[in-house]
Every structure is written in C-alpha cells, then in structure tokens.
Figure 1: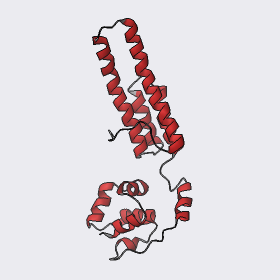
Figure 2 (figure 1 turned 90 degrees about the vertical axis):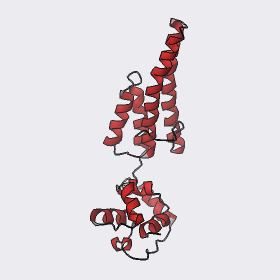
Figure 3 (figure 1 turned 30 degrees about the vertical axis):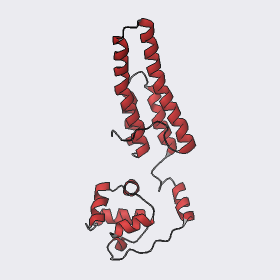
Figure 4 (figure 1 turned 45 degrees about the vertical axis):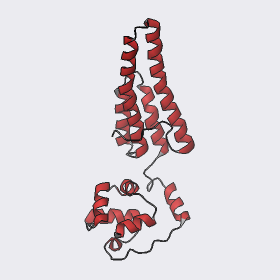
Length: 192
C-alpha cells in the first residue's frame, strides 16, 4: 500500500474527495498511489489538504494521523476548507428555472455558474446532466406526440406537461438539497 493511499484512507477520503479538496486531478492521485513520487506543488497541495508534513508523503512509513471528529467537524464548517457550498448548489439548480422555455440556456447558465461559483462537484454535475437529459428527451417526446395526431388540444397539453415536468424536477431537487444535501432526481452517470 502506498504512503498516500494509507494516509488518505486514515482520513476516510476517496480519491475523488481528495482531488476536489486538493485541486489535484484524480489521475495524478492514482499515479502517486501507484508509486510515482509527488513533486513540488502536488506534494505541497496534498500535504496541506491531508494536514501532514510534506516529508510524510516521501517516507517509507506513513505518519500516524489522529482521528478526532471534533477537529474534522470544525474544519468542515469553515468555508475555506469545504469546497461544497449547498447555497450555491441550490442557486445553480434554481437558475435552470429562469430559462425553462429556452432549453439550451437551462444547461449553459448552470454550467457558467458552476465555474463562476467554483462548485465543480458531483452534485452540480448531476444537476447539469439531468438538465441535459431533459433537454434531449423533451423534443423527442413532443415529436412523438405530434406524430400520434391526437389533435391540437393534446399537443398543447403535452407541451405544458413537458415544461411542468422540468419545473417539478428542479423544485424537487432544490427541496432535497435543503433537507438532505443530495438530489432527488439524479443519473447513475455524469454527462460532464
């Protein structure tokens, strides 16, 4: 087992979580855990994120890292050390509502906000992915409805249902972010 992997596991972090906190790519973390020696900025960023000395990543035996829940909880409350800001995530989610009738913008605006607010985490990726799927599926369902030739009233009702379905998805996800810090509607994969 590599030094970085042992220390990361003692801190109960996944490679993805360490990547988000340290701003080092998952691939670089995988290479270091496979045996590549971290250098310069990478070593400093990982050591600072894991709250260890830089030399601990180079030593043969990783240093013991005391596990104290109180220290971790106090660090999680500080906005500097926590990359996930649920208020921003909720704003990114609700921004799709403003452009519900302009489907490309219901993807582009949350994407722009993701970079502006520096919230490049799985929740935001899932929000955007759900909007991408809805944007692809809505015209397909509408075209199928037209081909069924059930009349103009049916077409208007179908259009309304398609738009309301996205409003429901966005509002339900916002409520779930408030309550449980997760999404109600999500994909098992990410499109971005």
